[in-house]
Image 1 (tube, rainbow, N blue to C red):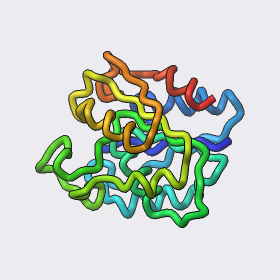
Image 2: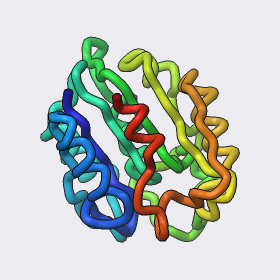
Image 3: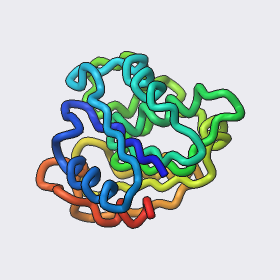
Length: 181
């Protein structure tokens, strides 16, 4: 099995809980990929999608997206040909995809957000196993975004009370590892 992590905005694969995840996955014998996404401080959707394309996700791939990385995964799935499938998608603290719900209204968009949000019907054609993880105390992405994503994806919704945005101070997410296995 291959696991691909798409990190969030303003960060990289060597920060937050990402190194812990890579070490834990490699210990299980699975392949782990966490690309350094370009312009993480001011990301452009097309550039992030190109990085995901290079890894060629398939039906033996688990896609994990944190925050803006989760938005990129959902946008990537929206664009795939009918025959493309992935094994599982796990989203942590992922934004709603609607322009009106951007965490910081003045921040640049570059394709991540649209007026209508995600096309969940198209996305669900590429995977049948979705998990949404969201903490009630997330100060960047409102809890309602997790609820909206879980409903639209027909996902299992795992909630927390003390993980914030799964960022500073969070060094491991054992529940995530359980979802991969």
